[in-house]
Length: 167
Image 1: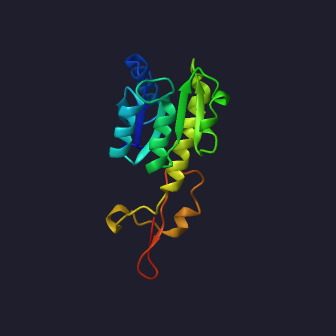
Image 2: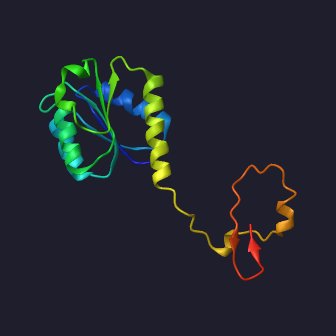
Image 3: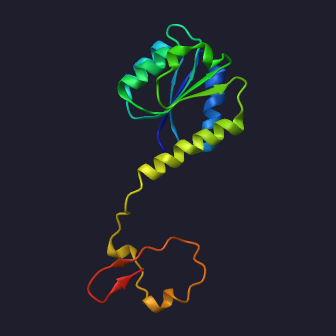
C-alpha cells in the first residue's frame, strides 16, 4: 500500500529517474513527475493530497519557488528544494514552513534521514485503532499471557462478553 504521492520536479529526465529510483528504495510511494515549475503547478492543483514534493530550483517555465507557492496554496506537505545554489541567496523561501534544502550533489544519508522523518510523522498521524472483528482473534486464557517472556508479534486484547477476553 502506497505511503503517499511524491512529486518529482526537474527539467532533466535523468534526474527525475534517479530520484524516483532513490525514493522507491525508501518506501512504497506513488510517483508524479513534472519537467517544469509550470507543469508542477498543474500536477499540484490536481493532487492536493501530496505526501512530498522534491523539486529542482532552476527550470523554465516556472522555478522551484513557483512550485512551492503552488503547493502552499493547497497543502502543507514537505517541500525539498534540490539545488546546487545556496538557499540563503533566495530570501523568497523565508517564512515558509516545512521547506528543506538538499544540496547537489545529493547527500544520500541526510536525505534518507529527512524522508524517514516524514514517513514516521505520517505513520504517527495516521495511527488509528485497528478495525478487527471477532473472527480475527484467537481465544487465549489470560493466565497464558503471564507465562510469555518474548513475543515477536503484536498482541491485541479485546474484551468481549463479560468474563471473556480475546488475544
